[in-house]
Length: 93
Image (cartoon, rainbow, N blue to C red; front, top):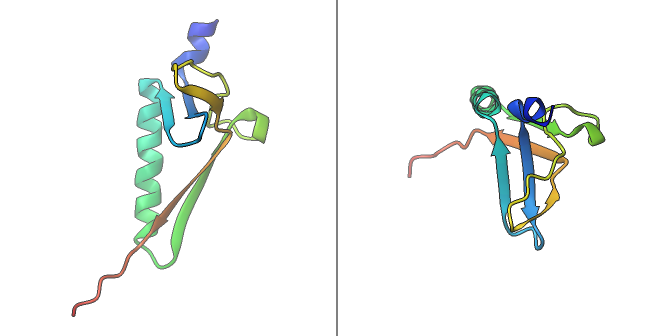
């Protein structure tokens, strides 16, 4: 069953000093993440800003898995990711 669980895996991990973030994901979840980023980008084109929350089940979500994959540098699961999209207005000088 471990393989079945990993088919839909999207895990965020950080190193001990929180200087690096590691993303482990199945192809299916990478495509899903890309679609979420596209949706945030489209929303950010409108006035204001856009954001989305991705969380593990431990934090009340279902988007992220909470299984540490085990990079040598990885130490801890990230339970909550907030992605913001901002439309930056450029002004002519």
